[in-house]
Image 1 (cartoon, rainbow, N blue to C red):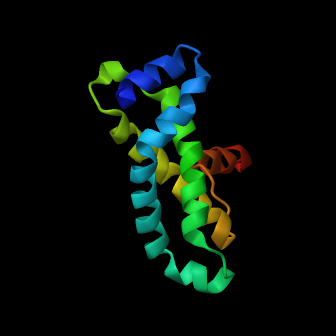
Image 2 (spheres, helix red, strand yellow; image 1 turned 180 degrees about the vertical axis):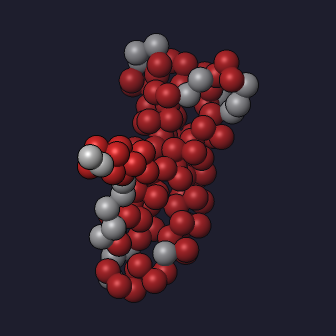
Length: 117
């Protein structure tokens, strides 16, 4: 079964296909997690954590989100959608590991607007 077919089943309410989807894409997630962890060598030195494991485990959350938000009618493959959600989750993890508070830029603009007299 293709990734897209697995996603259709998951979106139809058959959550029991999520482990099958994970098995199908975990190689891609591992590759992206390795690339992200290599970019974070300085973070690894500061925290002493195994950042590859953190990125890889975060990848499961990205798969879950991508599976529920993928729109096949847009003509893209599931891995393209998953790549977007991996970047999103990896950026949140980077922010969390570095101690930086990840904020939506629009949230900050709204707060500044509310402060003006």
